Image 1: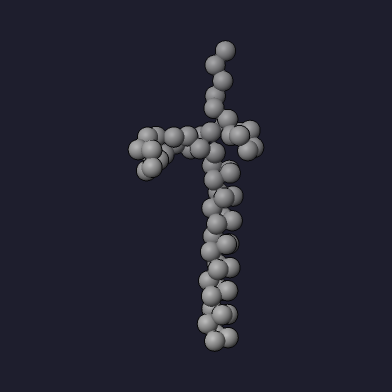
Image 2: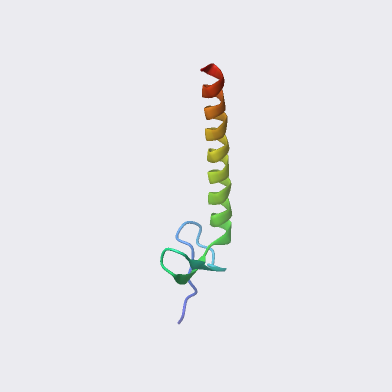
Length: 59
C-alpha cells in the first residue's frame, strides 16, 4: 500500500510543489501550514517596523 506524503504538523496531504532554492530540488509542502507561517512572519515583520519607528521617535 502506497501512502501519499503528509504534513508532519497538521496531517493533511502535501499538495504544494515548488523548487527549493537551497536544495536545488523540487519539494512538496503543505499549503495550509505554509500560509499560516507566512502570515505570522508578516505580522512579526510589521511589529519590528513599528518598534523601530517608536524607538526613532523617542530618540
